[in-house]
Amino acid sequence: MQAAEVTKSMRKPTNLSLDSALLKEAKALGINVSRSAEAGIAEAVKLHKQKQWLEDNATALASSNAYVEANGLPLARHRQF
Image (cartoon, rainbow, N blue to C red; front, side, top):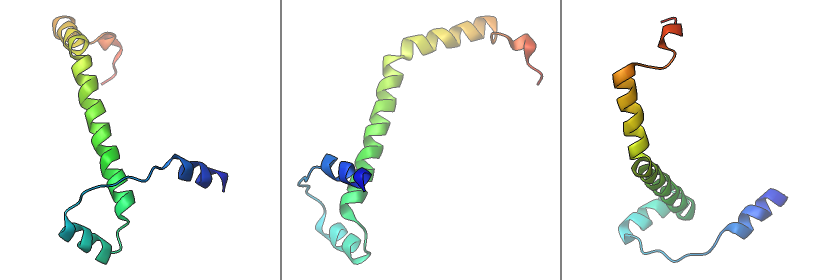
């Protein structure tokens, strides 16, 4: 029960503006709008972080790719396939 209380205390009431027809349909289908919105925002945050990581590490990735193109994979001679 403590885990549920911790999760509950970490949640924050928030006001959102949503398409009224979509909200009505979601409620009619029994969809938990708060949890669905949270899941959508979590996915958007994840995608943004992935994009940001790729941008932040583009130079290192390009360097690594250039090395492999020029020299092949390190330890490739030990591969059994």
